[in-house]
Length: 206
Length: 201
Image (cartoon, rainbow over all chains, first blue to last red; front, top):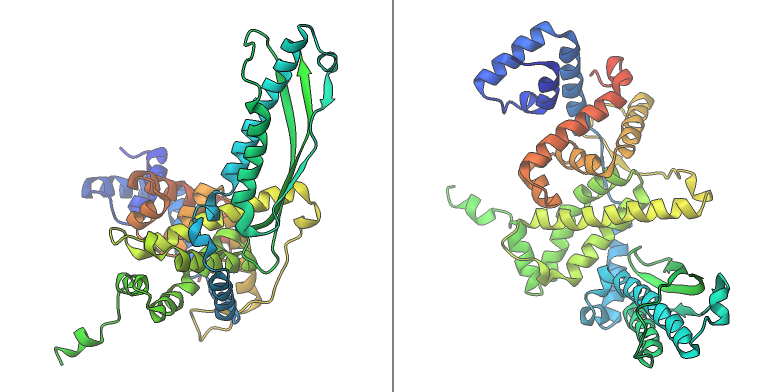
């Protein structure tokens, strides 16, 4: 027995002729009785025909010239992308990693400050503090990866000196990172030509 | 007569990429020539914007140029290159969403003059036809990404279910049910048009 739900679920199989003989007969019986499914079936079939007959869009006349110039630039850059293949698709990863490390490092910094003073530090009583304000820029697409590493190292340097920490103290903080990525106007959109982000505020609550 | 077809047989995609991997740049040109329009059409139907589609296809070929050795003979070349274009187009769509969040001036849909090939060369492309295409494209644009991907690959690019599954890295059963649901969604959106004169030919 075919009902409307079953019919709809396997409508494409029916239209593309991939049902078994029994199923097909059952579907056809249902079509004979159900005007709604008959209409839907006709419409989906018409839709398929229409989609396959849609005009085919072509590349613009300048496509080949643009591609050649892009490739020339690629060669001119000395194949630097070959040395850092991951830069093409994973440039965001180091930035996110750096942000994550920044989070942890800030936690350690704040914690250490409290331990050293053995009391609540003045900054802890404030709900909102300015902890860091620095902008990281990357001037060229090929430097993005190195710049991201630089950011990571910057954060690591600041957390390295703080070895001991008291895990009993509970703290929470939030870091507001303002990011901005620009793209070279003549380049394809996947390469950031300039990336900067700024760490601005940290909220501390006890 | 029997030998000639073998001799003149055009090289397969896999032959071409293998030649390009051995630094034959003419093979790269042939690949570009063979794929640029179908990938453009795919990207355009997915993004609904010609400029973005062209950028995506440019980037696809640049990646092919850069990472020719990433291709392995185990996969069909067409699947591989469609996957690259598909991923880039998806990224473009996400970027667009982000841009829209930032800038309201970006909301306008820019129309650009564009060369469009009509498969039925004898028929004049009249206003009705143009409007029909616009309405259908808008309905495709409004589909969720997952549905859009399958409907464009299956019903517009007319690839097999198997190939669609490989490109999107989803099981065959999922592709089939997703295509069916995408068709029903699109049919519901275009119901009024289908009912009247738009689709009936």
